[in-house]
Length: 478
Image (cartoon, rainbow, N blue to C red):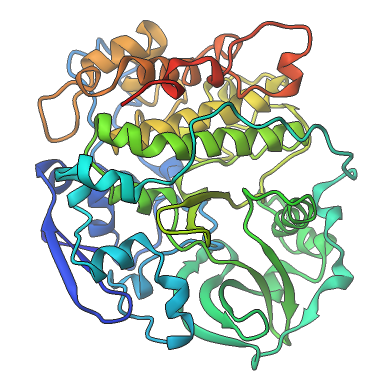
């Protein structure tokens, strides 16, 4: 799918034929839909490096609602298994191998092109298309938590350096580039694994950067906040525990110059890509994301009950993949655990992570920020963007964003009454249902003591505190 002069084109993955459609003015003038159009081949922009024009306008009277315009890209993204547009050219015609045709056949974009159904149908005729597009997940109570897991002292210790295997180029057939991985000086490719007889995502990194071990990496990259060996340890642990919310870890390989990390491939890409093709903001989009939100909350809660804090949840670090059980079923996958921690109560992490997602207390200088609640705040931002298709604010750092300053003084409900949907005169409170606004208000509460939890075990022992599962949105009938 690619944006061409305000028009989005869906290309058949195998045949190359296209079905085009126009989104409404909302997507042409800003918001999440315009991001791919502006991206080109440039390196994604980190929202932490954005020059905020509100920095010298310390939380003004906020006479007019903030409109953020297009979503900034995020350089912290680890595209381990993200489905991105091949070569940034914006079409899906790059894969022609008959070996993987059956694996693509369940893709929602493939089905749309194959049957002449443009993704715009989800926005224009959502009531007809949603049942086929949305995941078939029952709206039931969340499953019981797995409980705590005894972990080693450091997450990277779960991966054994000796398990690295020799790279066999005859086993892996390169299909196409998925994404440049600028931070690691590498790239992510879609390859066909002849041993497993299925496509896989392969992250290729120079061994001169990643090192031969965790200690070697630290010596080569002093001060680096994102550690690939920590990511490998988490992937190994989650794979051993059978956690379905993580991509399947297939192993680490090495040749003379490069290290290769092989994982399962997420067919639908990250949440940013997925929600761009969805309905316009409103009830239809809420209905579409509700099963995804349930999976997401359950996944992060399970992670917390295993004493692991993600610390970098964002649209780009959450993937969705077609499952083999049938068309329309999607599974949420968490990726990029390179900033994960086993320490729930953390010191000031300002400057580490992506600006819009950072809980405000992380800028406070406190040495007792609750990682459970900062992850919950980040999920609130994710849900806001999925439905509204724009960030709620650019930063939570004091003095950097009028929008968040307004929320701190007046509350999220007042902000939703002020804020306009980008490119329109419609106020957000007119689009969002009351139960969804309640959920957002609880997750995006600036005071962590009042914030909704994800229902972790630690919050359910001897204390009464509301969680996301108490909100009416999960019981609402659309």
